[in-house]
Length: 408
Image: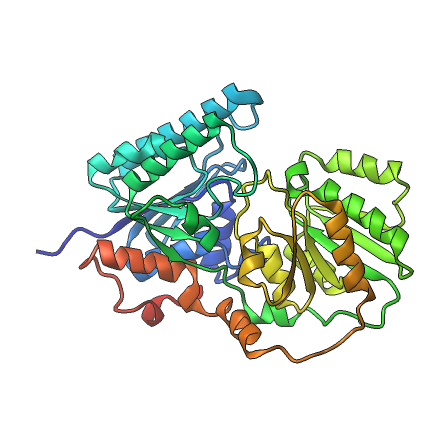
């Protein structure tokens, strides 16, 4: 007797999975993202395994799409945006309720749950339904370089215990995450995956340019270090003879505050706030810069940080604080500084701006690091396939991911 068709569910977080799905159906990459999206990789796995699949996000643009046995839903949280602890608690409870309701109706064999969907404590009891839960963890569980109150430490212990109860295996974006996982957890490491042609389209940095250009890309929030970077820029500008320029790409709650601070410091000629950037715009700004700066503070719950990778792959110099996991993974190519220190950032900027331009050939180890971000063997979808193959044998998965997990 043939088993029932495989049913997969993906709790995808806040991204616009419906928009990505529409591009995926046309065999296009999502133009809003530089790396391959994780949702498109989920669609690849669903198609390769001939699964009936449901992917749900909390994107504010409500939408539903369905094709090839895959249904995709953008379902905004009604409590999103509420301020304070009460609003945060209500959002967590609503997200957990939606997930429970979906799973009781859909009854999938396996559920991929993006970290941040809701508290693990609220969804751990789902294991009693016999559903295979697969956490996909993209950020550290807590800031490793910031002090925590006893309440936060107790909460983190509870969440780690719940995470262990959810599943013995998980998908992990970095070694920094692995170190915080509960004992006995078996992480499968994945890397962000990039198209060669997207990287090849970025021109080399203009070594003859009079102005040394810096680029920040990410959320405009205090915890990401944008004000530390602005202060560091001002310090470096006063110390250097070479002109500097800084571009901020991104939006966020501190955008207006940052714009006001730029005006107060009379830096409008030297600092540009680009706002939200499409893939093409970001590609252009990356091509114009000499160095990428990632000034994340110790207070931020950091992920792998793909901006560091994108600077590295494009041949730019990269400065990043030690709280960024990818800064350590790419230690041969990244200048790592301590967090919460505009002075340390400024010193790193000054050294790079004063250094003579060289076109040294990359070492063998650096070349291997580059290749890993183009290699499907390290991708999220290949690691997901491996978890499914181990936990759901005989469900129609291909003999190997390379046989049928081809880019859409």
